[in-house]
Amino acid sequence: MNKKAFTLIELLAVIVILAIIALIAVPIIINIIRDTKEKSREISKDLYLNAVEQAILKKNLKEEFNPSTCTVQKDGNLDCNGTPLVVEVEGEKPCNGTITITKGLVTGENIGYCDGTLVKDPTPFEQDSWDTIVENVRNGNISKYKVGDTRQVDLGELGVHTLRIANITTPDDCKKEEFSQTACGFVIEFADIINLQQMNPEDTNVGGWNDSALRTYLTDTIYESLPQELKDVVIDTYVVSGHGLEDNNNQNYVLENEKLYLLSPHEVWENSSEDNDITYDTAWDNTRQLDYYSNTGVTIDDYSGAIKKLNDGYSWWLRSSIFNSTDRFSIVCFNGIFGSHVANDVRYGVSPAFRIG
Image (cartoon, rainbow, N blue to C red; front, side, top):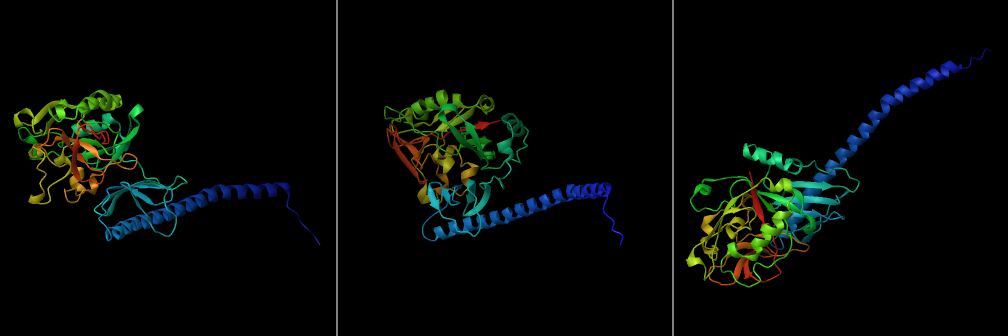
């Protein structure tokens, strides 16, 4: 019987053919595995975000709970403005990132899993240079920037903090005489608290925001800590502030060329009824609510969207004096409600805003 074996050339030919097949097939298989994994993660993400909304609804049935921003913890549960929230969902949970909430619904997310996948692409506000952003603002090309978008800023010794787009509109009210420009145009605010400071060590509101030690601190320390490329695009702002009991012949205070400023009560809260007007601020009608707080539904009766954090959460100063007091300024309390406190208290935070253009 005749037996025929493969020659060396034939074996080499088979090996070459197999190698060619492998070169073609392996990338296809890898892509299929990758696409399957990405689709699986997308499904997991959708299930997780739905579970977040369900957890908020469930908590709201027991108590008032309307967070604006939640931070994803390592175990996949959330820290919502200082309040823990357990998220119950089958499958893998993310372990880092943030989720934006508006009236109990997820309206934005930037979350990731511990192997580094499924991290959302940066927003244009995060990615664009400050020169690019301000050029778009000046040309009216701001549709890609959304109120509530955030990005990080390094303040050197003051640490890394979060900036947030707080306003993009300029309604007709902004054209009124003696109307503060602090909530008009492209306004950026700190979404967190930089540190804790006194408003005035002398414990007085005489002279208002204009003469306060905290205003000097904003100008001499915080503004000078901004990166130069950001300082270059910050514009002067016309700022109107309310007066105190023994102040300036009962006239509001005006600054025409401010770089950084604290917010005022009306820029945070809106009235929800005539009985709930914040009458302690004489400059209430000289400004308007910022788009961010309006979109979040912040009123003096529904105020959780005004919470800002430093570690476990602190109250933060506003620029308006209390009209029937000689030593108090308005504040946002740790739970988001309106309040006031004496000017020399060291427990209140600094969280300024500014305009670019």
